[in-house]
Image (cartoon, rainbow, N blue to C red; front, side, top):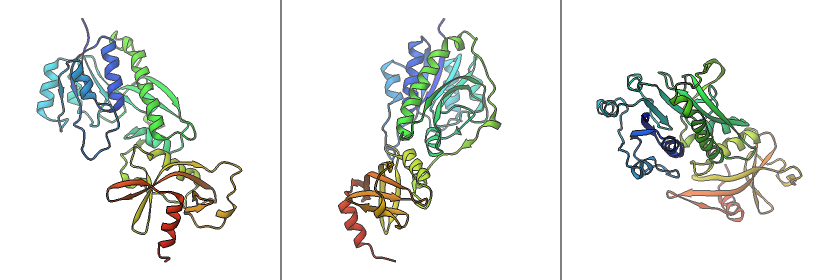
Length: 314
């Protein structure tokens, strides 16, 4: 008899891992997902659409603690509950409905980067590796026993979106590899030593504000961590906002002599945009956007230079 599952899922990881369960012959009795927010940039796949294409019942409750949700999960009689990038913590009494356990895919190599937006945090912190972990769900977030992990590299110029694509593949590979053993009751349950990791909270658009007095590497890590399709790293000049959409640390050998002595911030040199940072190093800005009237438009070095010349000096 096929194992039955209730799946809580969202985003690209939710799409791919749901498809893994179906490909492995799991009977997905119910999918619980989120309604897309009209205020969010929806650049990722739809779990709801995939479930509906496969004829699976879909619900989108606002409250994971509601009696209606608990009744729906109970009625599905799941052997397993899976959570794939679902955005709410699931209460322990709900997890207990699954006769054979409840498992979550998390986008880091636990116990590192427990909590929210782990890929963005890993890039921001300058990590060179992250990955995906399948673990048992518990009362605390990302704290249950580790079932399997798959690492991926973070290259020096990777943005968080690039790394997230790798993590999505790692999540799919992890689940595909270990699912037969999990179904057979033979999967390992390894210690998840929280003392060797840290918990990170969610991030807001305001957290993308640039501080050019920091080192160039730290500034660049923030740019990479929140680059589009995320809200982007930004700076305000006067009443105007500018978003750094694409950038690179200035290459060795780049002539930065004309930037010497300039204060930290955005500057134009030889019709190119640079950010001078607190350690004297510079970042080459390849795409700068001017945010105004709810829109973002790319601004050229010449146009930015003209804007700067028009800003009153303090």
